[in-house]
Length: 134
Image 1 (cartoon, rainbow, N blue to C red):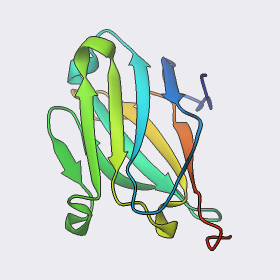
Image 2 (image 1 turned 180 degrees about the horizontal axis):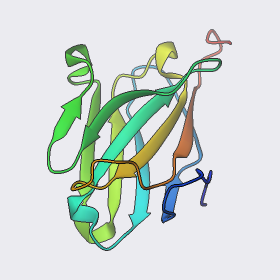
Image 3 (image 1 turned 120 degrees about the horizontal axis):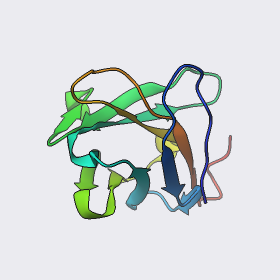
């Protein structure tokens, strides 16, 4: 499944996110994979954003060759792995809670130019717990 939102003025590339929606019980781990079809995948930065309803997306982490977290308190909560051979980047959200119910986006930027050149793609995380309602 490919989810694409075209952003004016930015170069287009093919990116996919799987799965599109995830439901997990609290305290479990969620993996969200973003596939980027680009020849220099090893050199691009992959940025992950979280968006709650009614708010702007906020970057939580990014990486080219190593992980950078926006908040030190997220150490152990979020991790990112790049699989160069598959052109995939996976965000791991550990010990999920109701606060993690959000839309997650991946974006890429060129490592040399440091400007966004890709599309944003999204995944939604929902939680399986009868007491968790929005």
